[in-house]
Amino acid sequence: MYKKWSTYMLFIGLIILVAGCTLIPTSTHSIIETPFQNSSPISLTQPSATLPPSPVPPTNIATSASTSVTTFPNPSLYTWIPVVTGLSRPIGITNAGDGSGILYVIEKAGVIRMIQNGQLLPDPFLDISNLVKSSGGEQGLLGIAFHPNYSQNGFNYVDYTDLNGNTVIARFSKSLTTTSEIPSTVATSQVILLQIHQPYANHNGGQLAFGPDGYLYIGMGDGGSEGDPHAYGQSVQTLLAKILRIDVDHGSPYAIPAGNPYANGGGLPEIWALGLRNPWRFSFDSRTGDLYIGDVGQDLWEEIDYLPASFNAVPANFGWSIREGLHPYKNTPNDTGTPLIDPVYEYGHDLGCAVIGGYVYRGSALPDFNGVYLLGDNCSGRVWGLIGTGNDSFKGQVLFQTGLNISSFGVDENGEIYLADLGGGIYQLEKK
Image (cartoon, rainbow, N blue to C red; front, side, top):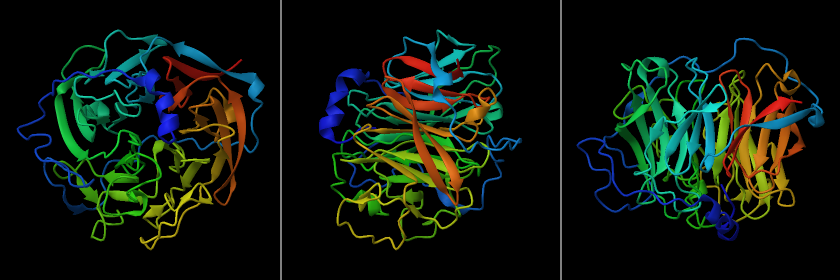
């Protein structure tokens, strides 16, 4: 989420929590038996051959297509209202899309908490703190996504840093036979899909989201340190510095979607997009399916990347570490043969130091925000809005100075938007 080591170390005091040391058994397979040689995936079983698109229906695409606004609302008429406080380093917010109305909040040390009707429920949804390494500034439980058919199959997927400091993508299951109205997930239900070596403690990415195509998208940082020392950004032989796409409804433990750019060779088949330094939160517009990515910069520039739902010239190459934002960074060659995609918005370090990707507002309570993409900055507490101006171009404006240590945004089942403060609070955008 953060910049280079100097800035990164400023936040360690805020986000350190020592994890336990007992591994929960996942299956008869060991998690890691030999040292990592590179950052290629180590799966418990190999993915099957490529398959046609998954039959899972599109997720969370609104049926009502109200017109997006063309001008920014007056921010003085709105405010961020605290919903709950007292959480431990919250870094993610989402919903399960199951009609429960529950907000799920990721606590960095390995716990998923639940908010229902504005109240923090006492029991966690999931506690894997004994699996998670969170002592490093950017390590921990980093992401969760609920299967589009979660209400039927009970599957949720998480991204966490294991006790060896490596990324794990795993599936957990809730009990489908419980009579309780409050859901919970059994930690021993873990099935590991992917393990990815992390050479350093920072730039772990961590975002998980199901796309409109029903596939699981996974955000991976460039492995850390600073300046992409191993040139992972432009390499298609590593899963680092990428957005991955896998089909969790086929194969064992997953299949490769036929539309992935390297499904038939030339690079690792899980890769869907490359050239990302640390994509700290990406999201799909729930009405259009367009993709927005907040990619944390290195020395000078923070950027928002964008792909319309109609984009089909995969792989998408966002340019790191050839450049930072729109600006040259290294003389790294573009050996992938793919053109670089410009960010649609950038801001300099006079306004912040670590972008937090957000969501396009599609709720009903704040019609003046309809179609506005909201993003923030971890260091300055500023919140921006972006509005599309046609031809995949955008205009941006600072809307709020929250004074908060923003770590993530999220939306509830109604499309209302929230942000997480690393200091322990969840806030909702409301009209005064």
